[in-house]
Image (cartoon, one colour):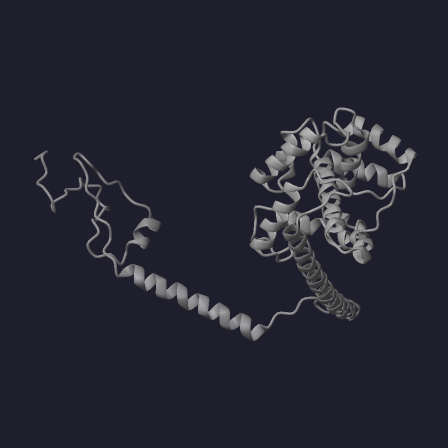
Length: 327
């Protein structure tokens, strides 16, 4: 089974205490080696635990490694985080390096949770009393990929939902301005209208994105199924040919001979074109003497009329340019 096919299931399985202990022990062994997390993943698999390298790394850094800060973000860190995001977008590794010894995954998760909390409180402050109970349901539709797209500096990434620049700026403005909002706080009427308008827009875009994802997933499954069927048919044909002691791979002899003939003709044409050029002139500084050449050399230049005769081993005189000076 290939490494990529092992981890296709997206269902999250909680880590057990025994699994954490094994992870810690394998980290102590492999952490300074190349492809450490892949080796750790393989060791866990031998013990019956199916975890990919990314799961192992994030579990260790976010929960087991004592050198990383896992506490809740302070108000000062939140303010600095918004400041860094305005510069780097959603480049969490760059941002984490500038915070208080935190991992990129921890920073990202805490930021998403913080944004959803502010968004939920904005909805409760904006919706009518009979709709306030929908705020949690609406907030749940604010998927991490939507938040990442809104705060991203890369607007050409096709894996993200298509959100207009105007709505991105409105969302960032509302979240940033009201990041200290508490339950029961009131908003101005204009802000309430903006929150409701933004909420309707994001719900529609999220629904459209999910529909496209489902269509794309369905299409990919059909392609995968067709490919598997085609491969199975091809394998059956190969097995039949093996049983009949025939060649496995067939060559179209007619096309092969035609291509061979064309290649030969191209070689002849290239040789004819080469003969149209004059042979290179050898300009020497005296004294210069040719020695008896090999038969292969004479055969190579047998058709060149003006090439100097080297059979007698006589001094070569460059008469085209100057008189010999050793007379």
